[in-house]
Image (cartoon, rainbow, N blue to C red; front, top):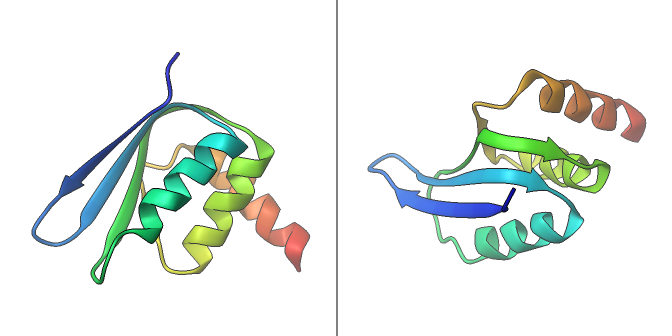
Length: 89
């Protein structure tokens, strides 16, 4: 399956829809896109994510801790983010 990021601008936020498997390289690509966003609310929609490796989980945990919103986050990703946060304590 192919990794894809689609950017949509809504009146209330900019949303990045992530599709396919996400690894460290893909997390870096998403991070680069997020850095180019100006002011305003930014969300990442994980509805179409299929697999997330450990490095990508750590990235998502950092981004969420910094205020990035995660939409449609699958339960296995949510549990992995919680575990990554627990490791950092």
